[in-house]
Image (cartoon, rainbow, N blue to C red; front, side, top):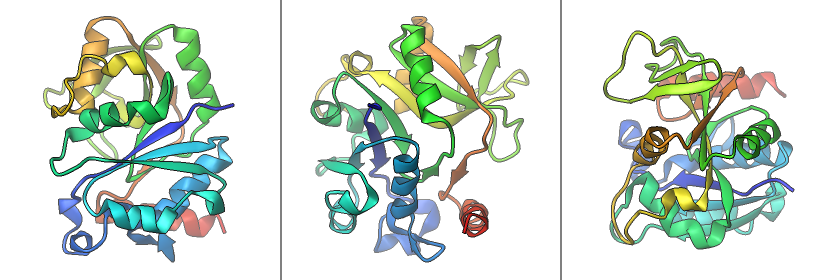
Length: 233
């Protein structure tokens, strides 16, 4: 049985306004239906049976749409941010009681057609507290932010990039619950901070993915994904 997945779907999606002033990014229509429907069906097709949606802004509308997840072949739970946005790391920390000892993490605007079972196996085999998937992006779809060589992550930084960074954080992570143990309840924390702390303590494994990622955080990304989905009909 596969690990559950935490889906980070609580952001404000300011880049897509005015569309996201009334609906959350997860519910933007892509090729005829809300993006979340495509994302959940992809996860189901990759053997994922359970997801926890970490929601904030307009989160009730996400729950109203997806419900129990039954029609997508999934079991869904919901973790609400509350009145104050806690950042991606804080949102996961709040959802820990629903996630168990280990779990995948991905973003609510990511469509990642990779082999999730292989990623899970790599995590267990590593013996590390966390795993980051990476893709040799070479600056094509976004700025590369990972130095990866000989199967290891040597550097990760979204702000201070170097010419040696030819890979990018693919957007799918795997973590043991202990990776988030140091976060104070109610505090704000970004997932990037968790990755960097694990890397600094030699507790971050790396797994290279060879299928490109898709995202709906930009209009160009929406167009790319729409073309992909239409080609899969």
